[in-house]
Image 1 (spheres, rainbow, N blue to C red):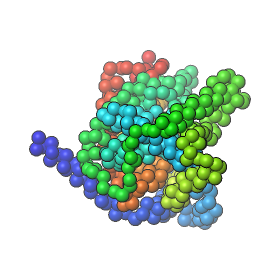
Image 2: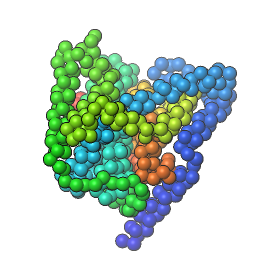
Image 3: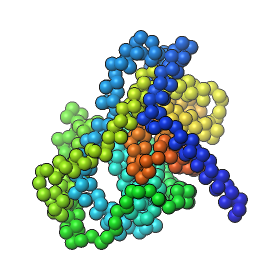
Image 4: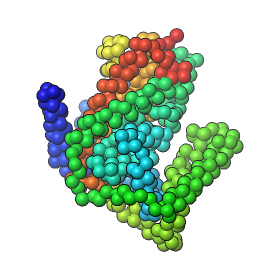
Length: 508
C-alpha cells in the first residue's frame, strides 16, 4: 500500500513539475510567436545543410525551404493575413458560435445540463462524456468546440472539478480519435491512401472504408473504460477541490415552462434533422454530390458548419421564445454578440498559432522529418511485435509535428504498407496500428489545430492555466492509452482477429 502511494506521489510530482515548468513559459500567444521564430531559424540551418528527402509517393525530392532568405521573407510578409484568415478552426468556431450564442443566451444549454445532472446516474457521467467525445469523431469539430467546455460545465455543476470534466471530454474527442462506434469521414480518406500504397505490391488490391471497424469498435469500448478510470482515479484526486471564481450552474428542478421549452426545442431539432436527412439520404438528395451522387464528398459535408450553426440556432430560438428570454430580433442579435465577446483572447491566440503552423508547413520541416523517420524505421530490421510497437511510437512521435492524419498517412503509407505486405501483414492491420499513434499524442501537442481554443477554455476556470496545465493534465491519458492500445493490438495480432470487414491481420 505504501509503495503504491509512493509511486502515485512520484507520478503526481512529475505531473506537477511539468505543469509548473510549462506555465512558466510565456503567454501562449508569445510562445507561438517564439516557436515560429525557431522554425524560421531551423529552416535556415536545415536549408544550408542541404537537408532533404525523397517523397515515397511521388518520388520527388523534398527540400527544406529557408524562411530567412529573400523568397522566404517575401512569403512571410505577404501571407500573414492569409495564414490568419484561412486557419481552419477560426472560421468554423466563429460561425458555430453564432448558433451557440443563441442556444446559450436563451438558456437552453443551462437547462440541458440541469436535466442531464438531475436525470443521469452520477456514476455514469464520466463515461457518458467520453462516449460523447468518441461519437463526436463523426464531426470532430463539434467535440472541440462544444463538448469539451460542456464536459467542464457538467462536472462543475455536479460539484466536481471542472478541469476533470474538461480532461475527460478532451480525451474522448482527441486522444481517442482512432476509436469509434461508427464510420467517420476520415475512414474513406485513409482507406483510399492505403489502397494506393497497397497497389504498389498488388495492383488488384482495394481497401474499403470499414477495414478497421472491428478494431475501432473494440478500441472505443476500451477508451471509455480506461478513460473513465484515468479521470476518476488519477486526474480528479490530483486536481482536488476547485477553488476558482467561476460559478457553477445552480441545479434546480425544471419549471413547467422550462420543460415546455425543452420539449418544443426537441421537436424543432428533430424536424431539422429530418429535413437535413431528406437532403442527403435519397439518391437524388439536394445536398448529395451533384455529379457522382455520393455522400462523403458532397455539399452536405463540405458545408456542415452551416448545418451545425442551425442545429444550435433553431432549438435555441424556439426555447428562448417559449421561456421569454427571446422577445424580438434584438434579443437574438444580443445573444449572438455576447458569444462573440468571449472570443477576443482566442482570436489573438489564433493569429500567432496560425503563423507558427503555416510557417512550419511552408518550410517542409515536418514533411522531411516524417519521410526520414519512416525510412529509418523501415531500415532498422525489426519484425513482428517489435516492428508494430516501433511503428506505433513513430506514428505518435510524428503526430507531435504533423496534426493531419491524412497528410501523415499519405507519407507513411507508401513506405510501410508495401513493407508490411512483404512481411505478410494486411494493409488494414497496418492502417489500424497507424491510427493508434495518430491519436494518443493529439492532446499534448500545440501542433493540434484546436490547441489554442483548448487553452482558452481552460483559462475560463483559472487565468493561470496555460500550455503546461493542459499537457500535465493530459499526459496520463497519452501514456496509459498508448500502453493499453499497444496491448490490445498485440493481442489482436497474436489471435489473428480481423481488424474490420475484409481486414485480416495477415495476408491470405
